[in-house]
Length: 166
Ligand code: FE2
Ligand code: FE2
Ligand code: FE2
Image (tube, rainbow, N blue to C red; front, top):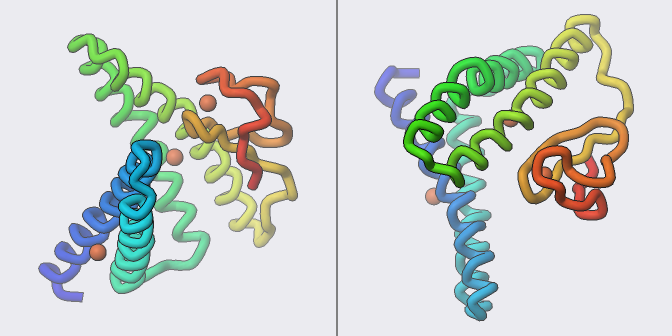
């Protein structure tokens, strides 16, 4: 692929991915404010942006799972080794409490993601799938756990009944 088109597709992928999430959050807010039909417009557009993001990513060229696990692990490792520690330090200096909380909660989940991806990489390298273990995600802060959901989220204290199982 030509360099400019590749860069443009990456930018478009980032923009569409952000729009997808943004519109979902906007939809929830519209719903809570009582604007049911406006919420529906946001949800429809959010889904459409997800399709655009997906298609741009595929147009960039998709690798096989062994390669994707490498990409995924490297992304998580960058976040926990460099990005979040740096960002959290700045948030602390600037006394941005809510930002610090949101970043530190994400950072804790990224550590779990990195561990899962690392083990998955080893499994696939040995031509095996990962074992069948339940994975739970806290719907409030995104903390990720294997096996059983604890009574409360260790990061944000949300009750386990709310956890989403994968
Ligand atoms: Fe779009
Ligand atoms: Fe992650
Ligand atoms: Fe949580």
